[in-house]
Image 1 (cartoon, rainbow, N blue to C red):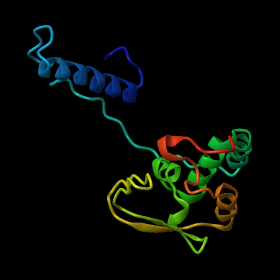
Image 2 (tube, one colour; image 1 turned 120 degrees about the horizontal axis):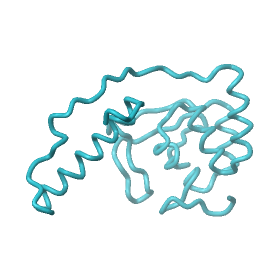
Image 3 (spheres, rainbow, N blue to C red; image 1 turned 45 degrees about the vertical axis):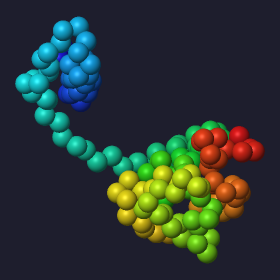
Image 4 (cartoon, rainbow, N blue to C red; image 1 turned 180 degrees about the vertical axis):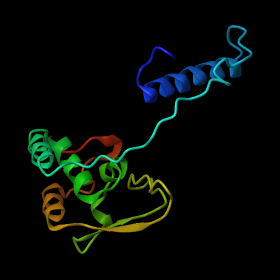
Length: 154
């Protein structure tokens, strides 16, 4: 731990190692009865805000253009500000009047909607650019079909 320079990486290493020892204890593997990571202090870390600069946005946007369907997904995440998992499961039947995305809080296995992270329904306004992108993708799942694969275009 002391040799790992990045505090976040050291904390992640500690967490992974602790998980392995906890699993071994639970499964009674190798006579492990104590998790040696229990009393190891984590490194202090501070969160930071990272915002793309005006000069960085066109670089990302152009790279997204080269990435095919994955680039479309990244653009939708950037333009809507929604979680990647929710954007990837966006359904056309959840789009209201072409400009609102109704995100049901509860999962709907019949259509493959996983629900929102907090379990609360909410609506997201879809800017004109997003509306135009979705019109090109309109086949039920905006980005992926059941099992995560998009039918048709790649």
